[in-house]
Length: 110
Length: 114
Image 1 (tube, helix red, strand yellow):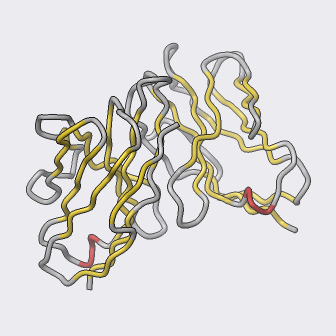
Image 2: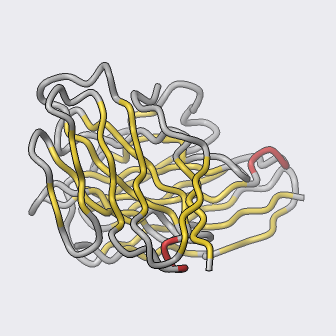
Image 3: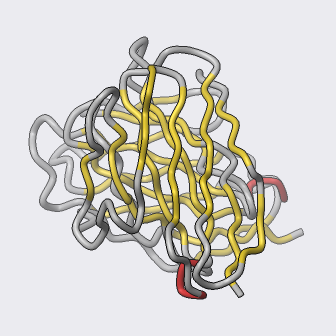
């Protein structure tokens, strides 16, 4: 079973920051938080991952709370191409299989 | 990253027939997986494809229905056997690379069973 809870859907205006929350209150100390997204009719795409510290790459930022029970994915300047389903995943180890939850359907509004 | 291709990209099949889906990766990978995505749903893991040995199936999936082969480090096949309309889904191949242990996904095979 998935170990994460995400809102079913969210809207965000184009050009604004999209903040996607995720709860993972049962996360263990060695488990990573991963984010993937799936644009319609494509395979899931890796976005970012973290263990304890906040992370940033060219696509997004990941903010993990100090107790690690929740995290937020931030798309700093959302575009229409960011419309997708976003999956927050807790992964036991970095070489373990990924189990998907239901994800958040993000709509970027023009 | 790894470049993953799947064949066919889509197919329409008759009830009772079988379809074999191929997954080819452009580099050697440590792990390969097969997922199913039913219409409007999230991805469900079917099995881990093990090189040179039987695949490891998740609860609810059996080898007779979804036989899997993985003859080497870059290739795997998934067969959907004795198909019914309930098997209409997107089937995705996924790999973990040895370099950074990240998991990548193929483009998927869209299967429609009539």
